[in-house]
Image (cartoon, rainbow, N blue to C red; front, side, top):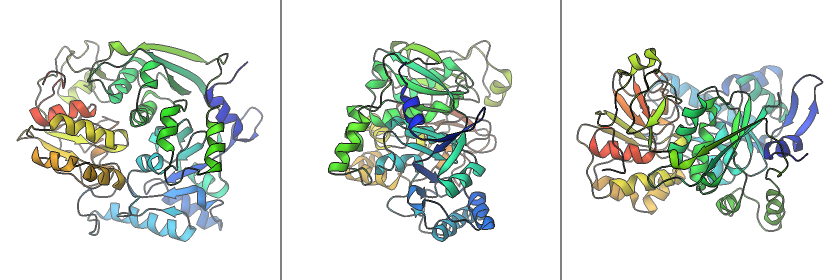
Length: 455
């Protein structure tokens, strides 16, 4: 019997297997940020241990950093302490470190792929659930807990129970005006937030194959929101073209050798998945959420289902049977590890070009990295955005989560391109409507939830 893509990478990284227990898995790359690493480094310190392979660890602050005036001291004492602690730990233990203001600083799940640190065939972990993002390059990438972060720092291995396998095939192509974010929200709405629990998902089919690498990163990023251990896409010519020539990508003969191996990373025809799901891309419209988890999503022109969870609707101030198109919004956020890449800014900018921002809407445009910021400047997107009344902020996780200064006030509605709409996720009492960059752009211009194909 053949192997799935996941099985090929997993099996290649097995160190030992405990009988009736977990697998000891070798980890090629670990990312660390300021929120989930302090206790792990302190654990090493107390045990008198060093980082086993520091060259394979990359750290940077992203969750707590401000997106304005990064050259000044961080005002919030908790955020400042977390960032300063990461700074001390990274320097003491000699790991790769990109501090606030560094040219390679940004959201770690944006910086990894764009620098070539994330490559096909790798195993990758981070103390962050959205590590699944890196599966888009054809890797096994998943989030781990802080005690496991310490384990990887000390041994470059982690104990994990092997997940089951699932393939989600999306046949046909996405319609015009439908983005990778819409595809992801549609899948989660069908699977529910627990429908992929215990599985590692491989995405396949014409709709997936025709996504750009940025779109694939968005899709894999959201895998965790349906309970999956991770998501991945088989590397192909789009992948190889994306990673070629990046700073940490192999060069010369090493590139040729790596490419030959990467071309073997695909599911065998006779491989068997534990579960198969087939969806049709022509059924997908621009999506929005109406509740308090990403699975509570619908087409932008649809009405809230009659069986929607009442507590969620109460928090959001919505009612079953209500149509949200046309509803005024207070904030729009473009950014996060889900939609903070250059393609997202291109899509948003193309829509708002020649238009003016809605007067009563606060809009935060936050690149996922300094590299994205520089691309925006180089392509003149910032000039178009400024002419439309928008301001470009500095890189960081920003309004994805309420760990920094960019918080949505209580009771206010935010159309957000981030990944979670939980109660209080963007600030105590904040009401989050998840959407893609096109729906966000339409909301920023019209001041209300709008189908971008009709405005």
